[in-house]
Amino acid sequence: MNEFDLDSFSREMPFTMPEHFMEEMTEKVVSQINRQRRRTHERRMYAFFAGAASVAAVAVLLLHPFGGNSLNVPDYDTISQCASIDEVFQNMSSDELGIYSMMSNYYGD
Amino acid sequence: MSKRDSKDSMNSQSSLSVSDESIARMLCDDSHVEQAVRLIMKKYGEQLYWHIRRMVVAHDDAQDVLQETMINVYKYRSTYSNEFPLSSWLYKIATNESLKLLKSKSVGMVSVDDLGDSLKETVRDEAGPDADETLVLLQEAIALLPAKQKMVFNLRYYDDKSYEEIHQIVGDSVNTLKTNYHYAVEKIKKYITDHQL
Image (cartoon, rainbow over all chains, first blue to last red; front, side, top):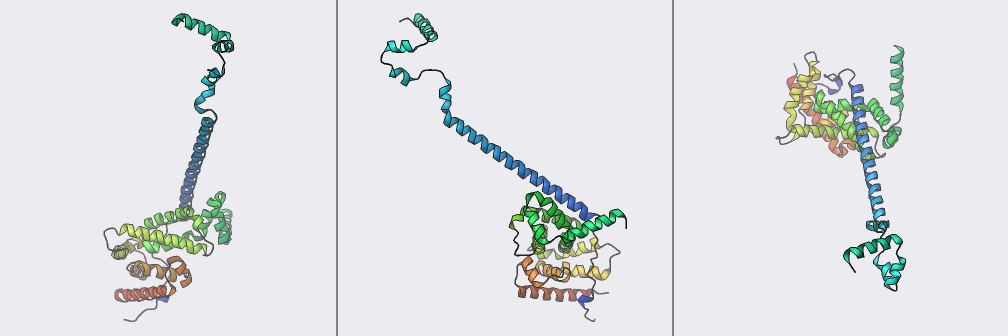
């Protein structure tokens, strides 16, 4: 049998591509890519807000450790700076004096 | 030609004239990614589809591989280097994805090359009863080739790629590619000579 010349063959394919395949594939690919882009954007936003919230929480803790200043109670240092117990009483407001006398009546001197 | 057909044709022509450099730039710009993907599909979609189809044979597989190829184009767009033509980069991704699919189908076999007989059967199924017998015979012969020879033969014979371009896609040296092509042609000739009616 004679050898044939490959170049004499048609470059056509014996298969077909379904009609509108490329258009449909383009839309499918684009929508999948857009979905991925949205997911990436959401992940970035989540990371940004989570980071911002963490920074804010650390800042609050550094500025107001355990909310110490929010309790209106004279601390030990303030009391110890007073020269005598009389000075402590002098520094008390009338409400505080009222509470003190109430408590001393209850517990006794 | 209707007004709409003429407009579509003009759009198609204008997308084909957009340079690869512009498409690559758009691809890396987040606000133009969608446009870049559309342009790639318009300019290279069919070439890539047929390149994949010649490798995996079945249309359904080619569809999955093309979709995965384009998703990878988007995912790995930052790795594209202007040193190579955009088309070579696209062909490289498509080739890798085709091989990945063939590998997944060859589970339990020694290598992808053992898929030959099953691919040959798929050629018959996909071609349909009205297909030109000589063309079917040629595709059967190609289906039986080892994956590397098949890749090189298809890129050279159908896509008219130079050995330099094939080197950019496949990665082997030009001499190795020439040897692969030579063996592929010899095997195809023998198969067709043996099976010619």
